[in-house]
Every structure is written in C-alpha cells, then in structure tokens.
Image (cartoon, rainbow, N blue to C red; front, side):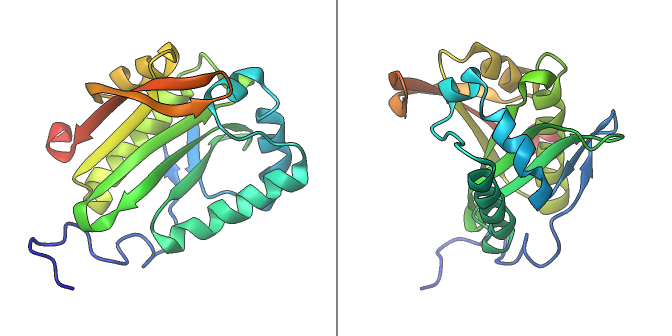
Length: 195
C-alpha cells in the first residue's frame, strides 16, 4: 500500500551498512555489542538502581549473552539499534545507548540509555546520547528523536535537559516498574533543533 506522504527514511537506511562505531571525541566509544560483553552486562544488572528503572533483570551471564545476541540482530531489522558504551582506551563497559522503536518511514526513534554503577557521575549518558543524536540526525537523517523516563528518575531528566531534549509533556501511568505504575516524561528533539 503506498504512502500519502514522502518516506522520510527508506528501508535499508540503517541495514545497508554495518553498524558503525561512534566516538564521543572525549574518551568514550559507542560500538556494537560483542559476545564477550555478557559478563559486564550481567554485572551491570546486579545494581539495585538498574532494577528500579528497568523492567528486566539478569539472572546469569548466559541470559545476558542471549540479550546480546538479540541486540546484535536488531540492526538488520531496523526496529532497534543498540550500542555498548565503552572506555576508548580500555574497552571497559560504561553503559548502553540505543535507538528503539524506530519508524524509518516517519524518521522517528526513541533514545534509551543506562550507565554502569562504576561509571555514574562521569557524564557517560550525556556524552553517549549527544553522539548518538548527532549521528542519527546528521549521518542518517532522522526527523525526530524521543526520550522517555519515569518522572521520579531525576538523573534521567537531567540527561534529557543537558542533551537538548525538550520536555513536551507527561504520559500518565505509562510504565510499569517493580514498585508499580510510573508517570513518564516525554522529551524530544527535532533535526532542525540541531542545525
């Protein structure tokens, strides 16, 4: 069925090439996930703060390895794209950044991130989000990126503000966490905001 408006990004806009490695320019690298990251992912998900804001938990390295295999396949499907955020010199995992729920036809995607406990307070989420956002707008041509977080997650709200994502509103009781329903802040950036 044909569309009534032009397609913003054609099918293959992502998968026609390999998932890129992106440098923040200040000591971090966003790279595709590797099987050997399973131990570090499992360790990251033992942090109680991860349990507070994420709906998944990792009960074993094998389970984390299964997640990584899923993340590796997602690039070709062009619905989600996940990067490990690592130290440029040591390759130590510091977090994750992703584009989720991608809709190429409309040039839309949702930014998501987490930071390991050892890397918190070092600007990892801000640096990774800025790098991913710049790539998505300038290299690929996305029109709009959204960022959602629980209203109670003040740290995530600070990341959104520092990376230029405008608060557009609150989605009431839109996410279910271990302690119940959470209202979610909706932030967004448009490509022209970056010009």
